[in-house]
Amino acid sequence: MRRAALPAAFAFAAALAAPPPAGAIETPARAAIVVDVTSGAVLLEKNADQPLPPASMSKLMTLNMVFEALQEGRLSEDDLLPVSERAWRKGGSKMFVRVGERIRVGDLLRGVTVQSGNDACIVLAEGLSGTEEAFAAAMNRRAPEIGLTNSNFRNASGWPEENHVMSVRDLATLAERIVTQFPEFHPLFSIREFTWEGITQQNRNPLLYLDMGADGLKTGHTSDAGYGLTATVEREGRRIVLVLAGLESAQQRRIEAEKLANWAFREFRTAPLFSAGQPVADAEVWIGASDRVTLAPESDIVVTVPIADAAALRARVSYDGPLPAPIVAGARVADLIVEAPGVEPMIFPLVAGEDVAAGGLTARVAAAARLLAARAGVLTRP
Image (cartoon, rainbow, N blue to C red; front, side, top):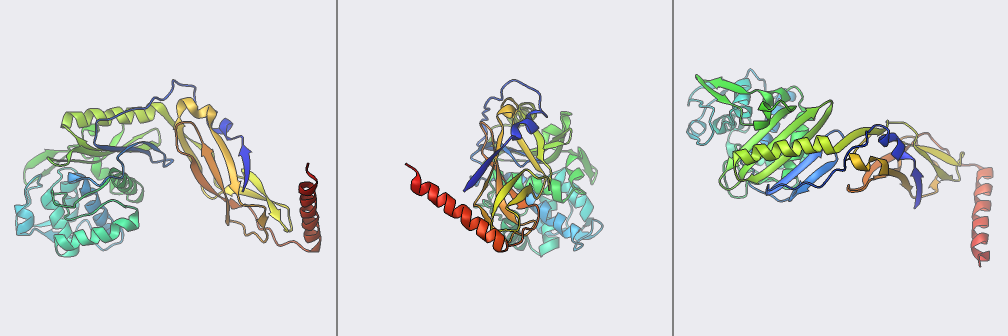
């Protein structure tokens, strides 16, 4: 295994000011996670993979299924969906649909994102899959395909039901997916109020009213789940996702969410380290037309670290080498490992910057000579 140190610290540290140290932070939430969406760095996690009752936060999966159908053209916001008696009778938070009505998908979406309507969720589920049970089965089939590993769905609304669970990491994954894959629908989550049948309801997300850059996504509460929130906050081009579960009150939920969001922006910085295609090092080639090949990231490398530790950032290249020729440009041949105190090592793939053909007779003779010299050095070493 070959390793090469890189002077990466200067590139990142130059982008940051010298601030006070980032201290650890605690939360009374049963489970929590804070993720920097730009870099993918996990800034905080607590019981992040524990499946828990998600309450209405699982409506994000229902919305994901609807957004996919809309994006693929299987559904239109102007389509009218019928309200069944089951949807009309559903308790809990409601949009107040009436049995027999036919409601625009666009209005139903607002009934879910703003009013958290359990009835609106059932109308959408039945409209897409025929029954709520079939829709839940479809969500369970889709979940692992989009990276949800600790979730199971029994209904479309998050209504308390045995084995209807999600982890906060899965909720964060889903939140990031909604923001990045469905930008045309993301603004629905920051609508502060919606009126249906003469009844105006306020969005329950407390961060929307604090002028702090919040623009989604979903609250949740039941007696079993406690108070939870899946939130996204964007400031100056940097976005974080935070998920809290199992808090004791709506007030505690608001306080904790604001505290963690401000901590993430205050104590961490995100900056580019290398651009896609930018050579960062080179690697030795075995019996090639060239004896070196440049290494470059296949996509932009952006990292997030505690501000106080920016100067201690280090990067190194790791590869099994020498790399045997022929080598095809764009093939993954190495890793860039970025390390800083207090965070998990970050690993980014590096690809060959150019083709390297297999060497001819001269290259083979030179390689054999190097091998013999190396072996001789081992044999004569005292």
